[in-house]
Amino acid sequence: MNLFVTGATGKVGSRFVPRMLQRGHHVKLLVRDAGKADWLRQQGAEVIVGDLLQPDNYVDALRDTDAVVHLAAQFRGVDENTTRISNIDGSIALARAARAADVPRFVFASTNNVYGSGGPPRPKHEDDEPRPAFAYPQTKVEAEAALLRLHHEQGLGLRIVRFPFVYGDRDPHITEVLPLLRNWNPAKRIHMAHHADISQALTLAASTPGMNGRIYNVADDAPISVAELLQLHHSEISSEALQQDYDPWDMIVDTTRIREELHYRPIYPSFYTARDAGAL
Image 1 (cartoon, rainbow, N blue to C red):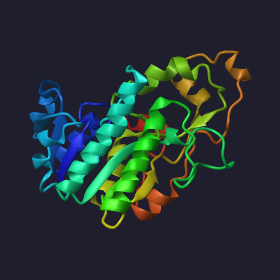
Image 2 (image 1 turned 60 degrees about the vertical axis):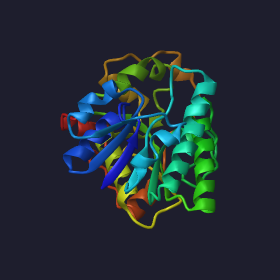
Image 3 (image 1 turned 180 degrees about the vertical axis):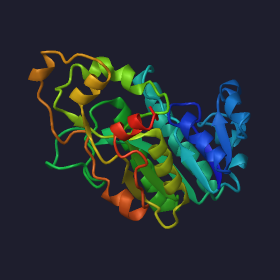
Image 4 (image 1 turned 120 degrees about the horizontal axis):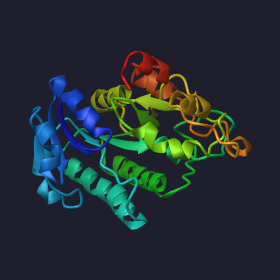
């Protein structure tokens, strides 16, 4: 495939792009700072310097592309206005440029945090009403809606992939959130996915024909409890956390659709299989 990827130097992109290059795909990267992507250029990626909000800088590079994989997003460390501009306006600008360049498939990386808490007492389904609780998933919900309008009105070949908590491949993500987890009820469970399985889901979304306008949850087969994560990382459970209320279905998702339509099967069905394989 000829792929056009944004967010290549982020947590997901920096694991996804090398996998694509190793499999022989041609990958173009849209970056603001070429220096940060030089290690990917050395592996064979083509680096294009540009800004999502200025499509004239990269629209020509989109031609003859099989799929755009849009991973770029603002998550932490910036104000809400910057988050909205990047996650909503930037996504729309890229999608319109992709449509103008006749790119057949546009994969948008979203988050399972769009579901929030509440709702039916079961795993979250792609058709459930979003209940985002903070700025990042709120911007993803708005971006999804705008991109779905472009799909229905202009034929954008959209596929939305909603990520759970992502880990593995020496990503410090779990360690970074341990202070937060210590405040959660230890009985709470969360769905996760290894970077290898995120890459699998993105590849399937980018290559499977006839799935335009579809939304897919990604997750492994075995949600893990906060208590297990803390124990595995030698972190104590606070006495206050034991008193915290929690929604047992928050951060738990239904993966039936991606399994049936894209034939996704986790390479690492649980955190324990990834640990035992030395893939953390």
